[in-house]
Image (cartoon, rainbow, N blue to C red; front, side, top):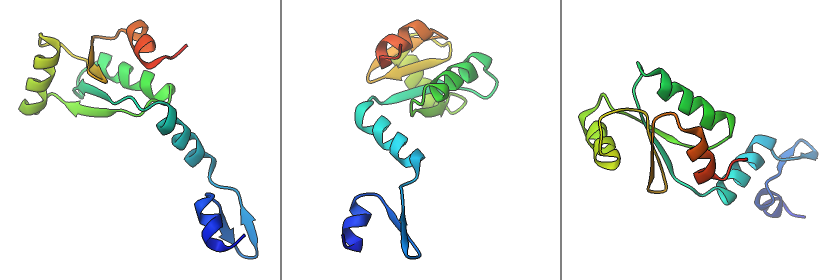
Length: 112
């Protein structure tokens, strides 16, 4: 196998030996391929429920984007999506979840 084929296979040459790819890369790659849902959390530093939602997503290895509602543009987006001014607001592929509702998040993200 030539070096280009090894790079395509995700391995790296280390001296005269080849080592397996970094396992975290494989996990992220698998998550990206099978969980192609876009998750946005509208949050604020001072909001404990927002931190709990983000911890829940991290524990379940769900990639997400956090948007701070202390910035007016993000606050306006969150209000438009949820129809109210409370946080956290989580957007899963266009489906809005208001508050710390792990039951609904598990359903949308297909987490057991």
